[in-house]
Image (cartoon, rainbow, N blue to C red; front, side):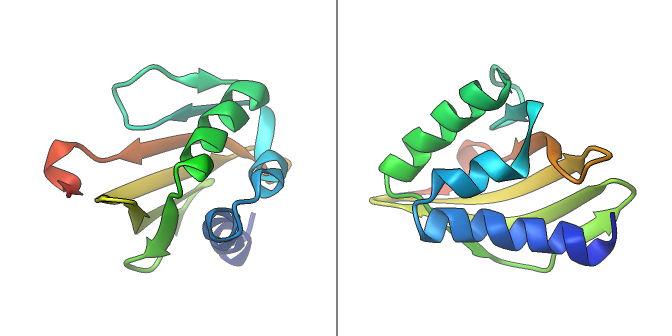
Length: 118
């Protein structure tokens, strides 16, 4: 994958939250992908589990805004952003790893209590 393809995946991710569109998320992820959000919590494995996880975030009104440029290396992209929800703001860094088909195979979100503001 080229860097611009990885960056476009990040843009689509932000768009999914802006439009409350689970179908964008479903198209981005590989069938056997994993999501660990935040790192250290139980992993959501497989597309159905991942979509269930994201449906909860979308229903809660989560919106994303990039706070810096994505960084591409190898088969991955890391990007800083802010999640805004009613009464809560979280500063996050996500890392997407892509499979050979250009689908997200793994997502890890890095944030903790020190990154949350009410």
